[in-house]
Length: 170
Image (tube, rainbow, N blue to C red):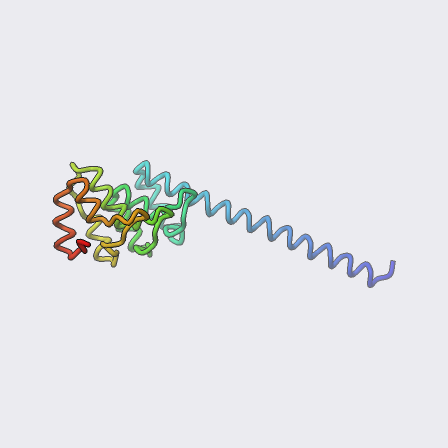
């Protein structure tokens, strides 16, 4: 074989192997990212604060990444009313403007937590979100705002707080 043909064959094989290796590495990165997000979401749901803090400190870039259910770890922390994690994630760059696939904002999810747990009187989570710039009038996919939801479920304390913060009644 002529040296030029051998050169082009070797170059082609090298390029092919580089592409295949790159694809494998990319797939591994995606797998690792998804695994980290799933681990973080699971630890939030299980209230495993130590694991959550460890993951958030090592991978703060994933707090705004969506899991397979269409929620970010930050949204799940809000939906669980987990004040320490919400604080940690806000300080780590959590986005209060993101919405779930069901068009629920972190504020809406935190308000829903208060509505479904009427015995829970700690509104620190919604206050944090409010002062971080969350829109308290943002409706979900069904057009319901946090104020409408709180009214429907008879949560007078939340209704009063939202009205004091000038939530829209329309």
